[in-house]
Amino acid sequence: MTATEHNRIEAVYGDREVAYEAGKYSPAIPGELYMLQRREEETLRALRASGLTDLAPLTILDAGCGRGLRLLDWLRWGADPMRLHGIDLVSRYVEAAGRLLPQAHICQAGADKLPFEDGTFDIVVQSMLMTSVLDEELRAAIAAELMRVLKPSGVLLWYDFRYAHPSNRDVRAIGRAEIERLFATCPISTRSLTLLPPLARALAPWSFTLCRVLERTAPPLRCIQRERSCHRGGRDNEATEILCDVIARLHVPRPRPLPELVPLSVWFEALEPAARTHGGILLKSHEASQQLSDPRDVVALHGDIHHENVLDFAPCGWLAIDPKRLVGERGFDYANIFCNPDVEDPSLGIAVDPERFASRLDIVVRRSGIPRERMLLWILAWAGLSATWFMPDGQTPEVDLRIAEMATAALGV
Image: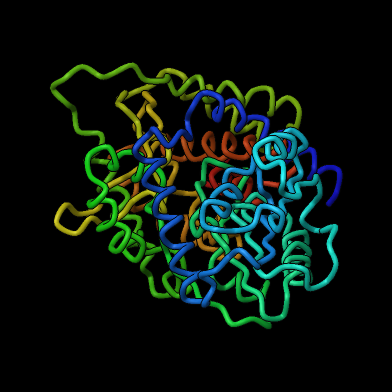
């Protein structure tokens, strides 16, 4: 693992430490408890399906074990603590896991260079490790190492994000196609489980049963914009119309006063220093944001409207999840549409297609009533801001920069 990637992951998990210590992931919170219970249920189901009901004689590795809490689950399920192994990149997590499980074998290591002999383990577990790795070659190296230390008759248990959170630039989703590429020689069984965390956290306090029902219905009903075939078939227009309709309903005036919300201008404070540092198209994005500094049509904003955050809830229709508690000009929410879905999967080539960009712009202007030039200013400003969120980690936000360039060209500036 490169020093740069090592430092990035250390920094990311340092930030998460603050949330952990604040109790954000406590099982006392209904949504967290629901997700923990579902993961345990499905893990035990998978073990039963593989004939692994007696864990005591088995040697088990948790790659990316964190503080050892999931290793503690294996102990509770009947594993021998002397046969439990865990590795993690973060030293303070390794120390915490060692204190929690003094008989287990915990060490600091990268998952791309595991300190074990070939064919050591009956069970290898990775839980939300791979989506934290942004480099594709490193992912492949980790997958190869996991397979190297697994016995030929062993089982690899995988629990990770199928859909990434677009505002979290520190993770990348992994779908079945990539899993099949990483483990091309293995028979693979996949199963979608655990409701989207924002939904689980919102709904679990009211009903675990409702969460279970939505687990079975929501994933296939995601907004229709992930495959190239949708692009060729013109369904991007349909998706854009749906997104515009959802935004318009979100912006309908409410009789009650707004709660305390974050001014949109606070988010845009990050754009000016980035523009000074990097120049180029970011300077134009910053100039656009300055032209928009006197907001019109101020509303409570969603703040993260995109194709993965709008779901079809059958009788209730298309609804948005995971709002960001912003307040500002309504054009910002419409601008969010334009970089997606390519930000999560640049190979799609949908958002960056000039014809798609023009068609989306026509639809948004028609449906929102926002003047074309002002809408382009919002697209330019938003794409630049989105790009700045990638840059501190050394990533190149190609999609965001390309969208900003197309908006600039359409404005003629």
